[in-house]
Length: 500
Image 1: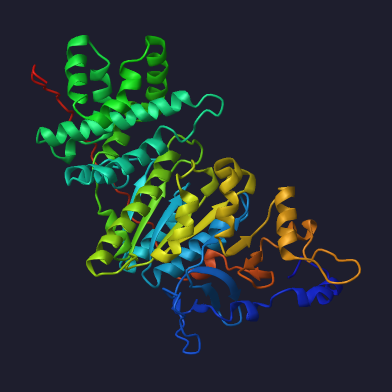
Image 2: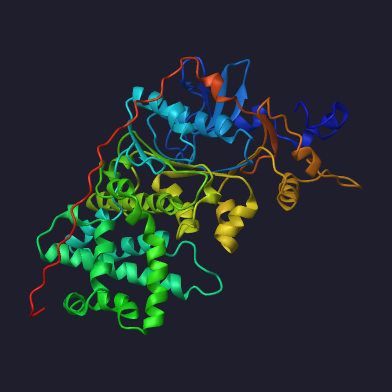
């Protein structure tokens, strides 16, 4: 507590704080010397524990160890730009998790996390994948339409609709106009219908999943709104399916002015796919099986430009789709074994840097509530609570309360500072005083890695976190850059008979 209190106040308020020893007694120690959890027979794993690795909560320089929360607890990390969130929490967490083989999905705004940790994970036997939205040809491919198309082809129509709706929510309707959401909602419905029309055409005309991509969704849009002959044939074909008709009719058969407004909104939302061939190539097929993340050691880095938000919807979509698909497969396995609830075989950790900058993830409060029972943990890194409220509004409290660990680094947000101060409590007596005042919370020693830790039902603790340099005795060179040759996906050639 080097700079939080002067000595007299520190001694006076000492009883209101948890000591590092008290706080970390139930947790696992990670040896910085051996780069692995210490096997301590006295700390027997409880039924709710599912691993030996997790988020660093404290650093003992004398013991050369890190105290790690290995339980199924979610964590909220708060600190603005420059507060060392990545160096004190994110990168160390990846190193610790990597020592035990737990899977990770990591949002990485600057690619710094990938460059610092990917080579270490590969050496540990991980399958490392990178979806590089900053430079699409320097990473693997992921097609968000493939999974729902597989469901559609297998007759799992309801599941296909559910996944397509998630795509529409994240790509078309994520940033709705509050004053007039009609245009965004209509464009989302139009997108939903186009995707289902593409599924229907590809399945009935013997076209494989290579034709199911965003470029062909846009191609169907162009045909459906082109000259009357082609348009009428395709529209007649679309109307053989009631759901597709319901989704498209509000655009195809509406007044011209309204149609123009909907199409303008739609075209704006999908513009990045039509003007960037490399991005379209990246989203044209899958280079990995998403289900493997929950079954074997896997790390997926989502590299997204932090200077512009146009691609953030794809990150939110990947988080949502991967979560639901892994749970779906775990549930199938459980039902085959006669078990009620499916649990992932290998724990998956979502480490979401700049979480509050991502577009709202549909149903995220429900996701974070149910994740623990599925062997999934979330670590949410935010710059401010205000950003979180902008995204999730009334559901912000649900997200916060489901994060049992809060790691507070610093803030200039007065209302949030007052909230943290209140959570730390007050002294007992005639004139109660905040145990940690707003001023105290702004004076944590950044260089010493000081942070305020609110952990479960324990009293607050001022802890020290180790910088990533302390973990990295052996430097790892960044992995070689993936260089894919650009290849445009096949374009659909719509041919319909006259009696359609």
